[in-house]
Image (cartoon, rainbow, N blue to C red; front, side):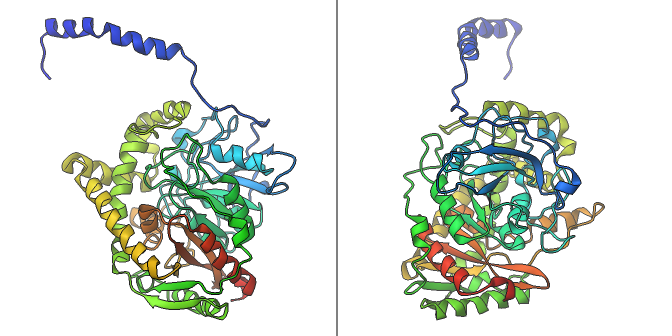
Length: 485
């Protein structure tokens, strides 16, 4: 716009009334849910307390004296707001921030009797499927030091897989619950998009934001999901979520279930032969349990990662970076203290992780030069991808494939070239990312060990069919010891 000084002054004079409205809003208190359970700020654990570098803060917040999670210890991924306890979401630019609100899932866990024992390290703003990008250094695999714990919920996976806590909260935008669950040997459920409120977690992109349970057993996973699921009235990602009796599904067995082994989930260019073989061997156990197991082809699965890419990259630039973690255009709880603190990234952008920088460069390029066209087209294509999976799920109750094409990989050295740093962050996504786009529930269950590392099998259900997944997962868990497979 081009204006004369006189014209500019005219505009300033007219705008005075509008500025007054901002003054009124500024004097009003923020409208936040109350913090209900006492806690302390906790402490940074010593190396002796933190052998896997999985903890960010140790604290203790005791929940209700009774409830389905009474006696269970829980670690929160460090993108979850826990009022009064420091949070950095893996990022040096967020270090020093302390939330003033509890995430909805925090209150629900405490209402159910859980004890929150700390915040678990995660990757730098959650932009890595490896465990090497967090500002506090790499998180170690609990089964094999020097190997990745998976990301971005790296600390959550390591603490559950290493038996340091009973359960943890993870977040999943491209596989970040299921990846560390597969690498660390635990049970990780990415629920249907919108089943669990994301309120009070730092978003990446609203249409792919998921949060859910990571546990040592299927039973605990189901009980934990029961505690945190359901609408809270504060998260527009939740559109008529349909609840079920998840713990009640655990003992119902796999008999009569129809399971499709998805051809396109195997044999990726990065697939390891032992992983594909372990998962195929596991399918025989489902047959012995009375399930009908057939091979199926869903060619669109190969396109899922490509469709995810513009949504994730352009979306994270708009919402998480330009939008200071919140963005605009949605009704819900805005964590304004987080928005204000996170906006500081602009003055410290050199500190951002290389994997985040790569995503930002790509997202910004396509927003600037292609007007958001590819984000919009990918969202249109997402409906078709969802329909392809739904068509397969009309003939089957569950889809089955490897969670990841590979086992945990060696952690890159500190002086690793950029290509290796990024490879170790994104190479594992082809089976997980498509279901963040389509929103289907998907769970990683351990199905064997190879070379001292766990192998994960993924079960995918129709929307709101978490109970069906739990039926199959629990039957498999009870039928065999995955550690000896």
